[in-house]
Amino acid sequence: MVSDPNYFDDEQMKADREKYVLDLTRDNVQLLINSIWELPTERVEESIVAKLPAAKAPLPRARKLPVPKPLTKWEEFAKKKGIKKRTREKKVYDPVLDKWVPTYGFQRYKAEKEKDWVLEVPQNDPYRDMFKEKRDLRIERVAKNEVARMKNIARAKKIATPRTGFVGPESASAKQLITASNIAKASTASVGVFQESLPNDKQARGIGVKELMPGEKRKKKASTIAGEKRRNMDIVTKVLNKKPKIDIDRAISLQKSEARAEYVPLPRSCGREEEEAANEGTGRKKAGKGGKKAKAFSRKKPKGGQGKRNHSKRAVGRKRR
Image (cartoon, rainbow, N blue to C red; front, side, top):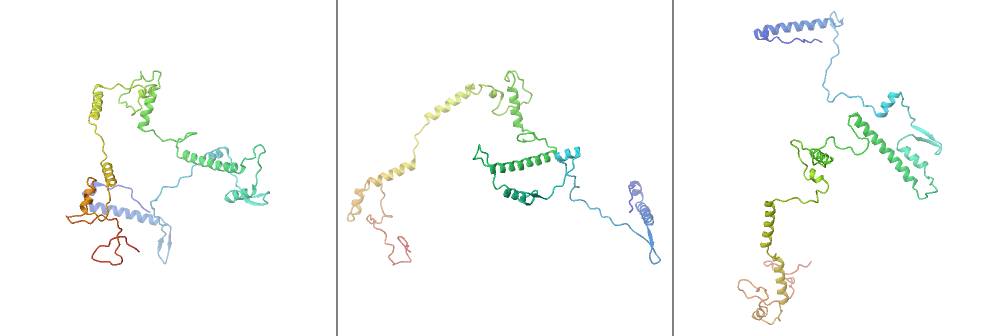
């Protein structure tokens, strides 16, 4: 109802704060009383009552104010020419189906499918798929509408779009700019020979003016003496220090296979000394550990305990279930 737009007086506030605040409060209360008596009044039980206005609670908005939807290209043209939109009927009568069908929507597609259950094929092309052509035309119309919708969004946001082709990025990168500059230099009449370079000009890595000249890639670049000497020394070092490569694992496996081939099994009646003497030099290790006398080599299968299990010893052989 009442507001005081005046600023505080700093000098009076510093001189006498209590007196200044008291005077300011008195003036504001007087303004409030004057504004109350300006309101419409009425008498209630021998008392005069003022009718206060409705309370207002200004709250901040969580979102910005809604803006009007931008017009599409066709809406702008219709507004300029004064074309008014005609209201379409939701259903129209189809004399072929002899019933009312929807004007648009999925029910319309079902009605068209029911109506065109057979299509005439041209005589010059009997294998022509008319159903596929009709389906392709429908897909093309949908894609055309989608492209028009995207263009309207781009126009509303003031985004420049080409008439045809792929929409590229808004700005070129530094590498693309350097490449374009080098191509422009090599596109002159002198193929970039007399083209002056700008200060702080950079060359694209691998795409300089010389690389863009015809026949430059076939020419071998002149090498320096130090670089050529270093390359020659590297070649000599590799040749002199070349050693035969030996596969240790393969050599061990070959030796083991040869030892197995040379092994001669003897009858069980032969003793330990005779077996070692017969297989001396084959590379086979002696059986047994810790100097204990090992048993003669036997190819018998393990007995597997035969039902007599000793829990203090580990079971030998395959476990049967």
